[in-house]
Image (tube, rainbow, N blue to C red; front, side, top):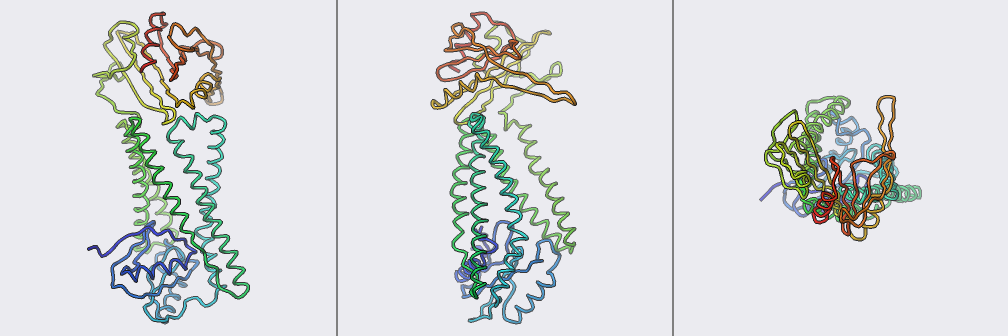
Length: 463
């Protein structure tokens, strides 16, 4: 039987009444609060007992202080004299307990309590949450602008599909939390001004519960989307990335605690904690990203290769629906192929590339197969043939190109419609083929004969 356990409590810094009630209820069940971490509250097993808990606030208390401040020490001495024992602290919140039948209340002046709570909130909760809300609204605004002006850019990317609702959720949570506190503070100020107590904060724990009720299944759907698309590496990378962030938070908490035990000053503790944050982020998150890139987690598995003329070639090339050899009828000594899944659950996309080398002659083919959901098919076709402008800045110079599509005969390809890409009015090697259930952007370096066009269309419309 374990003597300790950890719980994630969805309690707010100003919600002292629920903190006191919750801890008393836990003590009655045989669990006493021992400490509060970055996300988890630690409890130790004890005999079930009736224990009173009380909360006070000290404005200059901080997790970066090497030892209790003068105000904290004074409060602790006064509380000890009144029969209250210090349990732990949570930012500016100081938590005490007493097993006396009718302990002396810690706070006697409601106006003093309200002002202490508000000062604590202004130091911790309010600034950070307001800044985060502003940033979230800016990012959400840009996301919504992209969604309404170029919806397929959002609908064609699982990560963006996942991100959008998360931004809405985060904005809703922050707004609800800030609004709940502001309403509580206004009601409390009115009550205290009339000689009454601080207002009851109400049940605001539903905010976290609602957030997790959405977040857990939504994250599961995101991971399943990558698994269904044959991209397990992306799902594994995302899961490990989240674990690395949790580990980062845990290590930072331990770093701050260690620096406190070493009696470093508030400023030194803060500086080295931030420094550790940067270093750990580079090592943990950056290291994971490096491993994922080198291991092909994000781009798909990579077979054994060799180097010839400073370029990698496949030892055993994978199969592709259409290859250069299919088009030319020739064999090649050096072949490099890629077959990757892209897009989203709404716009699945398959990207195939091949480069071949025989002697000094290098050739290649690339095609991108998009299979939109039926209700997105017309929008996808319209978006695919729309003009687009691309630009590039190099030092003081800026270059731009206009890409358009001109319709060409579709019969040689066996397609419903076909278009050739123009860059500033000049033809490129790219062709867009429209089939009943898919769009294929085909880019082939050699000029194709009608027979080769027919073969390419036949292979690509069933790939």
